[in-house]
Amino acid sequence: MIHVQDKRLLLPDGRILAYADNGNTSSLTVCLYFHNVFNVGDASRLSPALHERVHLICPTAPGWGMSSPVPDSTQYASTITADISALLNHLHPDSSNLRLIICGHSFGSISAQILYGASYASFPYGYCIAGLILLDPLSPPQCHKDYWRFLSWQSYFLTGPPSRLLPFNFFGLLAKFAIKGKFQNEASAENFVRTTLLVMPTEEDETEEIAQWKADKGMADGQYEREVARNAVYSVALTWQGFLEIPQIYHSGWAGFALIYWTKNIPGLQLPSLHLTTMGLRMRE
Image (cartoon, rainbow, N blue to C red; front, side, top):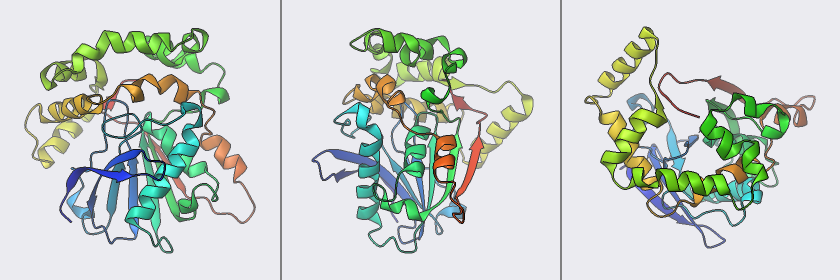
């Protein structure tokens, strides 16, 4: 297929879902990838080995890029299942033999876990799920009373107990005011990406692996950081609603993998495979 970034789908409720896809659109193996914050659906880098075998679909999360915000952040789970059902029905209306692999990075792991645990009535494509891959995943705060002890100070105020105590999303609005200027253009965003968003590896072997990965992709020095900065600027060019809804979505009562396992732990039911991993060059919390 010809790769086109940032396609648009008109959803049944009148909202817009932006997405990018790549690979073989006729393939019955579909990889669905959910991005982290300050990013958009980007399918531009698909391994050549997978071009003929996999259809990669990267939706842009609600409130980021050109995707419309959710109508109610407390109903995030039901909105995600409805949106992705509409997207898959648009791209793969015949789901009888579909093999669906769901991936999520950091904040995107919330959407991935929501889909994995959704009932088949709310997410009919749940029957097709063959695997779940979580990169630096988040777990539901309601399952871990001391979750806030492991947050960075920025995340503590944005999504920790203080965000629940003060009304009107005070810390979210304060954070937006503090960093909005850094996303006015790609140059300032690149500096923010290098100093704040990306955690550079400290181990020598990790550094070598990343350097080799960039070489294999034919990426010039600094190209990766510039691409991340470009997507970051684009992610908030239309609205900051996705960023402002982070605390509400995080505390919206979604179920994580552990809860999903016990709910679906039915004799004779074979669960899809799960893979958890951390990344050498990853986004800060």
